[in-house]
Length: 113
Image (cartoon, rainbow, N blue to C red; front, side, top):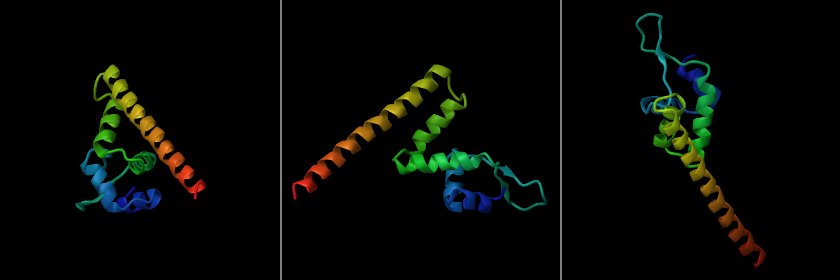
């Protein structure tokens, strides 16, 4: 599919998709038709881009995502890949715990008003 269709399916801008491609989170193939510079994006990128978008919304960096994808795709040895993913999971769990503390504080604050 072309970038416009991918953007429509994911809700991301074309610029965001190009940014993720430049940073190695997704890839595309050059179009086989003619001499245009269109790129073809595989259908499975819809799910991957939705995950990227959600992960970015909770504060994961492009570098974190690149490390995770590299680990999951066998870009490093299996044990190191597991450690990378487990470390990211721990960071997210810590962030959730901190967010819950802030929520409790705010709830306590407004209940005392």
